Amino acid sequence: MINRAAVLCVPWILLAVVGLQACKSAPPSNPQSRLVAKGRDLFFNETFAGNGRTCGTCHPEENNFTIDPAFIARLPKDNPLFVAEFNPALKENFENPALMREFGLILENLDGFGDLRNKFVMRGVPHVLGLRTSIQSPGGPRTGWSGDGAPGDGSLRSFATGAVIQHFTKTLNRIPGKDFRLPTSDELDALEAFQLSLGRQQDLVLPLRLKGTVPKRGQEIFLDNKLGKCNLCHVNAGATANLGAGSLGNANFNTGVEDLPDQPARLTTQKVPPDDGFHTPGDGTFNVPPLVEAADSGPFFHNNAIETIEGAVAFYDGEAFNNSPAGLLLKQADPQGAGIELDGTQIVAIAAFLRVINALENIRQSIELLEASLEVPFEERGRLLARAVHETDDSIRVLKGGGLHPEAVAPLQEARRLADKAVRSVFFGRRHTKEAIGEQKKARALLVE
Amino acid sequence: MTAWRFVVALVGMSAVLGSSPSAPAAQQMTEQYVPIGHSPGLSGKHTVIGKLQSVNAQEQTCAIADPTGQLNVKVTERTKIWLDRSKLQQPNVEGTFADLRPGVMVEVKPAEHPGGVGSGPAEWIKVEVSAP
Picture: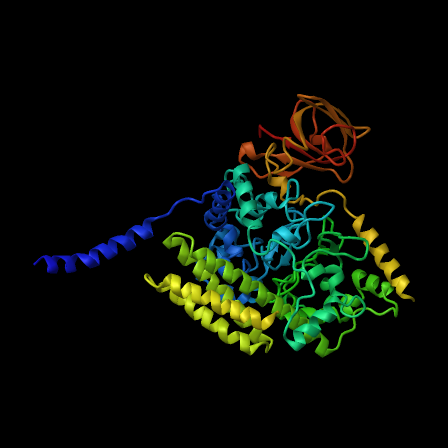
């Protein structure tokens, strides 16, 4: 009798233990972590009393904090990204739904709101990873595609205020307190802290001891100031420039992207005015984006003009770049008077290098997320593991897309399977997570010494 | 062209680019919609909020009284003037020099004097409109 009662009690005790484990949700211990957690909550959930959008609407965590046509195609019709399609007050001159859906482009009134029908630009959504390494310059912070994305003091902290006014408004009157509310000072602090916590906290130190023949050659060309010349403006594949007299921080250049022929958005019948970049009126320059995060966050350039990383590298071999102010400066500085002249194999090699450093960054993030998932309460664990799965998917996609390192793709696929299993497992989650970390490390060791 | 010239040219480019904008690159277009006193990172630090004391139309200058004294600024063709109508629940719009009248509440962002003192040009001036 006693034995039977004890046996009956066992499942209930187990359920209670699991239940208590699930309920354990202590707030982060230190002030900075609490600020980041608050910023995360604001970033993904706060609409600022506007049209329903949050920062996460255009910067979703599960898509590298950016949007592209493939991601957009998976969203439901009532997603607030499409607010111009279902809110009559925003139907005209707020977004261009056709260009949004086909090319991932967002409408911005960078030269003022005086003539909404004619004065606007169409821009892609930059990811917000690695901001700690990419927005500082001696002239002050550079935010957004042209470096002048924030009102007020122009800082990342102030960026959200401008974003709310441009993208969150209920009507085109843009009246604070009626069409939206502006973020408070505390909210701006938290949003900045969260954004700075995302992705890389420091730049790479190149060269890496890469194992693949083609990526290794790509790195050599990237670093060769007489051939690829990439490292002049993307030092260590980051977002800072150094043309010989010390770091310029995040610098602006006119690279001629606006002069590209056959830009996808301009092949349509839609109105796409020229984008004059930095300042109002603009000087035609745009700031340098970091390259480590590039391979899985296309399309590329401020206007999403090029879909593939190979195409983005090839841009610098073309007429638009080599006849641009930045291209002409490079030509003048070249001992042979040459711009950037690369052949197909060299373009692919540089892209292969960019693919591999992107996969390495995804692996770094995946390991960080998997390890963090072992230290947090049950409900937080699922989110971290899900992100690790997304990052691993990216690693696989980026390597496979370039036909690179199939031997590393196999352990990455196993790591993905294990992380996915850990998400769903109540009792063996930790074990699967630790095994996934092991597979990630195995993959990394196949890419770099 | 020699390798030396290559280095010199790059250093030259670097110097040119490095000496470009020295002030933070703030976006002006959304600033228009930020009410007086709420400009992030600027209000209370690098702007002056107070009543317009005097306006000189001939010299295109104005004087603002704030708790620490008086600020004189010049309105140039680059100075943006915005009418802050947020208290009326109406959209903020662009204004002109004629909207600068003694007695009105303004917020002024000096262009070259982030400390809020001096008599240089104003980058922008927000004018409070509290009655229709």
